[in-house]
Length: 394
Image (cartoon, rainbow, N blue to C red):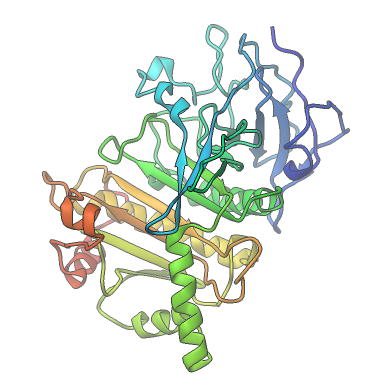
């Protein structure tokens, strides 16, 4: 039997490294103008779980009754000497749960006869430390790499459950719930960015077996990297060169150029969604705030509303374009925690590997080996197909 849950209201950053237990009389509200009741507990193996509730008065003191051994993670990062890019080595993830049937889903609420990762019988949005993380606060020692560079895989990997409904989807949630998810992303960006050793916070969602998901339940993840991701570093280099040459922001100039063009898919207050000029994927859409902002926590309340509405619209169009659930990846590119925050312009990217109703885009030798993408659909055609798709048909 697990000990009683550790219900606290302190920020996650002050709790992540210790095991001491304390109680406060009331949970704390999440960051932002919109009030979410944020309650942190400890699971049976010591991992943290955080409930984000849309209303007050819900008792979250339900314990995790599972008999779980303390989580053990062996993770390291190795630097590719040819490309000067970090690679995460996390061999313990080979044994992670893979596509269980619905009645064995670990992300559904617990019931009287079955305990899951979420002890409560229902929830709005839940965040918890991944049981099989790629990065961890205590990843274990790393032997000397000789002439090569390697380090412990210090960081944090979290799972974000968007809804307790196993058969739901982010696109089909009410815009108010998507707005809650946006608030949670902003909250976790602040908290994870405060952890020692974290250099970048990267929220994302993988949706569909074709993408490689291991759980069907609607969820995303957040990685707190101990380095700046290669794509982010490259974008920052481009942004720096552009600013040195023109004094302006590269991303702002792209948003301005696309604003009235044929690649625009949808708009929302403070936001523009468009297929990029040189799209790599058959269906690829970039979502940019029209203001120059470094990350999600910098969004004003109305801009968070706009992002929620835009995600609802766009992901609905994704499912409508072939009248079937579209497998996709949704990623959030934010400024690094400690550098180049003035250069970065936060944005999201949503893209799918499906190129027709029955065909997928595979990353073969040119893409995977040379890094040269070949797109089978013209960006202008993809934008027209998405504009013509009617959200809410499924």
